[in-house]
Length: 210
Image (cartoon, rainbow, N blue to C red; front, side, top):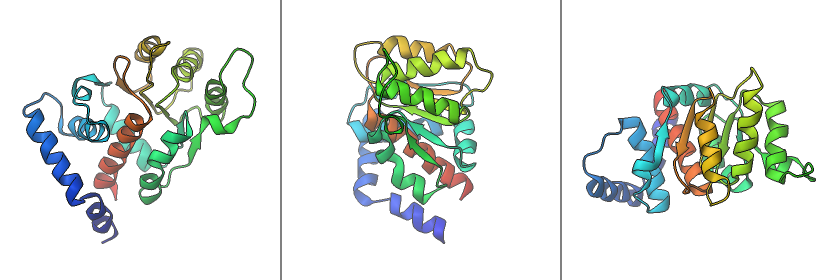
């Protein structure tokens, strides 16, 4: 009953109508059902149909994500906005520990941003966590650099930083790691996009496990 109640909350008439509009406008596509569920939620959050073609999934990443979420793996976000964007669904589903990296430190390391410093500190504490980068490409670059020299790797990384400086480089660096990932290709991304990806995964995991 709790599961049915939770899922019914997600089926708000306006949301369902929005999904129907998105489905009609997209028509046929080449994504799997689970990939499309993620893409559709991102499109709903942004009203940007480009994301249908911008999302890139490493092999088996969705199943890895669902298992990791249901196993209460800690979720580390780069910024508070991403944390707040997923907090409600995290609490209603698997109640994973939820950490905003930028809030973990007051003073950044020399030559590094607070977010970058926070991600590096979190990686020392949670090397096998789920990392969600929706804002800072420097944080993603720093994380990928640490992974290169460490045998302990995150469960998965969602790479969706946005902007013009170091964004492409950071996303390319992610594809060179051994970490399962969901990536937004190109310069687009942002906290709402990263949050939408995680929320879609949480719903898929809830449908499977709760």
